[in-house]
Length: 356
Image (cartoon, rainbow, N blue to C red; front, side, top):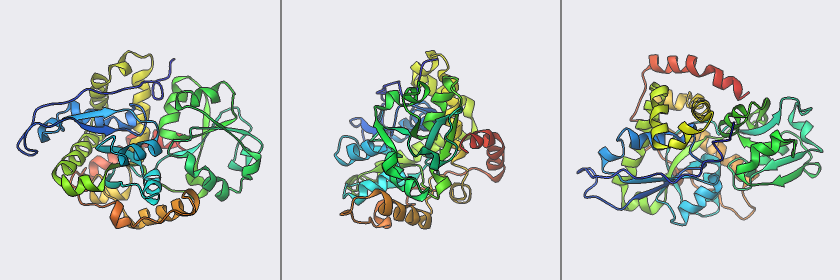
């Protein structure tokens, strides 16, 4: 079956018409994904399909990404108005003095890790020594490979890094061009599954590296000058994420209507369903369950920031002030009931098993 998640280049269309909430019709708001169109970020397209953008007077273009590091840079440079960015790369961007701020945390485990073939002799992180490791330099997980190696006691000098484009990452592993790849599990596992490629996953969290996942971001100036729009974008995306949890099959139908390539590609819908389920497993966190979707635990964010500064930031980087780059100002309004969360825990358990 052909690849989908890292193959489909997409610039989505727009939703138009305005409501009094955001006065008058406006030029298209530019939102970039961290990667290609996938089930894990389908809420950006579902928000348009269900009218969550339109009902708030938002005219939104959704554009594919090239990794969270690149998405953060593009947002900071003004190429986009909003971005969905992995939390670790977001902190790293702020440490490099790039103007970026988060408005809501969508899910709580970046699923960073190492993917290997099922028949690989690599069973533990230490087994990576002497092996060839494929990686995409602009991806969310690659900046923290040295951190994982240090925590797992891997001798970096013995590992050969083979840099490559995101479009050939999984193929390089399947074809044995490399022994392992650094990856985001919620992106790579669906691709491997679609290719009937048996595999195993070693999460970075197994070495004590715990990172929040996707964060809805903008620039500080946007938050200062157009708070109503920023609030509306956040609410629309979280409303769509809630629908995705409650009605996963309907959500996939909506996603396929917005991204037709998924529906016509062999295995495309199954790929999207797997990516969606893996992402949703990482939403089963006390932050969202107890406080509502989008909520950030500042103590956990601070601990994550310490990891970024210790392992991922350049020597001259300055630790960003947590209060300056993330808040719960727009988070926690959209909630699931305890019964709904319990149902999600049961439904999503098989996806959690895939992530090790």
